[in-house]
Length: 446
Ligand SMILES: *Cc1c(COP(=O)(O)O)cnc(C)c1O
Image (cartoon, rainbow, N blue to C red; front, side):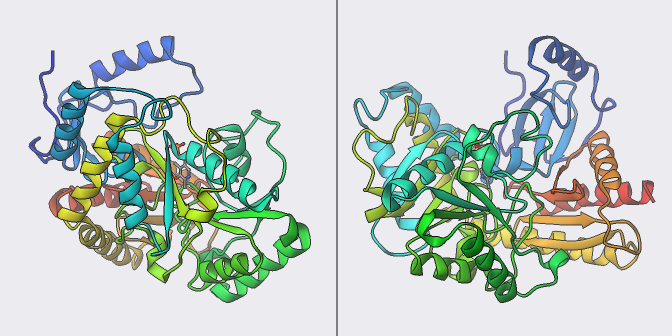
């Protein structure tokens, strides 16, 4: 049945043998349209049969450069050998018990590991879940239980997921929220720091944000502030230096739980194991998912023992939360980040991307901003001679990239950001090849 085995031994090349999507991919797309709910869209309709290193291979035999990692998930690479081995061993032992019925070691080991590697050296506890949204929901549950307060502060351009609470916490209407309300109450949105567009220092932006919180919510009603240290879906917006530390300090002073949503930024992606480390910010709680388990579904809330332990026994859980298979994958994944020094690799990847677009920007002023950290980089596209968002160019570029064998993701509140999230297992050569296709796309759409 399997005729192509994934993993890093796949030929690391971009190779097109049909147009994209090829006939077999088109066949799958037709079946998908007849069988799968229309709301489940696809960015690039290629039928993937194997992936690894920095490529994805489709059913027609095309080999595409992966600049998305399935949205920052396969940091260690697709079908990473250590993950495959750990998962294979675990499924032969047992596949499920429900941890809250009968526990097992893998879950506890992942909790111990998360407590050790997340920011801060205070005493911590962890709880495991399935998805990023579920981790965010539980972080809010825990913060409310601990503070006995209700309100939650979120930010412009924020993304926290697709469940009812996290949809309400997410900023962008289309496609995430439109027609899906009503949303949960007691969620308040305040301005963030967006250096390219607001021109403020971190201190100025923080003063502005804190003033909005105090005037519109009030610290005595506020359970938690939750923020992505670099906003993901919102456009890879890194706040100006000083913004996050100021929010953290204010939260601590006001008995507000300060939560960092590191679902996208976590696990070596930004050139540090966590983006919080960049400014030495220590959150009370941190949510993680995506890069945690090499592609298997797992998420976590990790944080101060006194906060995490405040919820009563039985208050947190779920049938599949902390699946033994996902836990085995997570342990192998986290060990791989450390063993292969992938934080360093993320910084190298970031330098290549930054240098590439800085050079291009000299002759193409539609590249408005180049930003990000490590292997989480973005280019904000604008109309020539202005800072006006250019979503048309952005979608044309993603389309051009797909047709030429490069999986390229977009994001941003204004739909005008191309983002680069390659697996950390990609080679320099393949990365540069992928970037050259993006440059060709800019030329083709001049
Ligand atoms: C992807 C994402 C989520 C939601 O994670 P899911 O696993 O899709 O539920 C939450 N927060 C951030 C910052 C994300 O990038």
